[in-house]
Picture 1 (tube, rainbow, N blue to C red):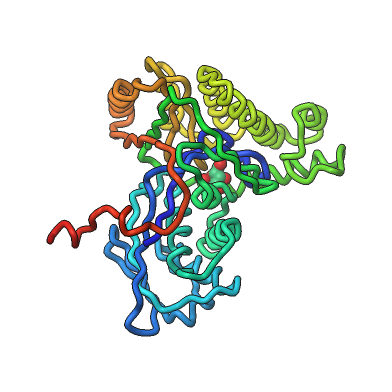
Picture 2 (cartoon, rainbow, N blue to C red):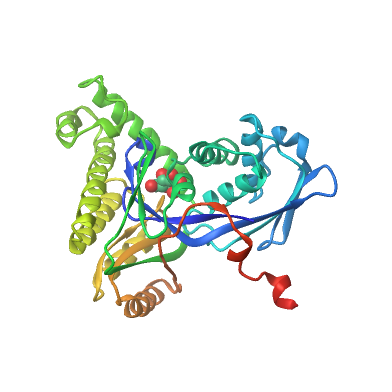
Length: 376
Ligand code: GLA
């Protein structure tokens, strides 16, 4: 059995595909894939939650095409693995996930990475290659544009720490958070359809910003190479909206660095402020928030014991991430749920975020009793 975690991103949003910095935390919520030998020459993937299966000739894994449901994630990973020279053998795979889908907690990366490990079995793979192949499956097979953050943290996360990822050098560094805080994600339970087209549009707007800035400084290859001073000098040469998109990315990269430094100083108030600044930048400059997320953030920061809050993930729904003084969680849950329920008629799901370790094989002793064991 193999496990890969979902994640919540503390800060550094829409910076990964601009080769900047991100600071996600892997969750205890994870996808598990159990693998058994197949009685024939086929590969079968079964989802426990959906009670649905997909199967194909293992030897034909390189020729798979999308069918536009959950099974495209393991199928896409199988095709990428074949293309990268790995063997796909006949197997039975049973998938079970506790990462809520469509919540912005990276259920897809968890499914991709755990499937990849189960498909690989004994074949060795470099961890970075694993993350990159899973991302390639999501972009090239499933057809969802994304950066490297989700797959990277699912593979490389360290227990009890956030992971600072430099998306240009692809280095990951564990960042231990102050002990006197707790992190809660609040799931708005909405996912606006606009999300995917807007994500693609933002990547194009960032590319347009880079083109404009390159006129002034030909060394600039991505928004990662742009300082606030250079941006200020070059913004007049670009359309207003492109300037605002670039300003979000450039200032967000700075906020990640400041967040890591504040975390090392144990300055929890500053951590909270940076999260709120990040949200405002995503709301007004990058325009990827929505009424539900803005409401959750505005309400959260008015609750006693809350240090800061922001939307997390791609946006247009999904979750907010909230930083609290340790011990303030109970009151927060109650107040945020009541306010959201009253305003939108929806009960939000609240997820405790305890930094968990990255993907790997689950040893027998670590397994929780499955349904078969329970019925015995
Ligand atoms: C989605 C993508 C990530 C990242 C975030 C925004 O979650 O999968 O790669 O771009 O959006 O930070």
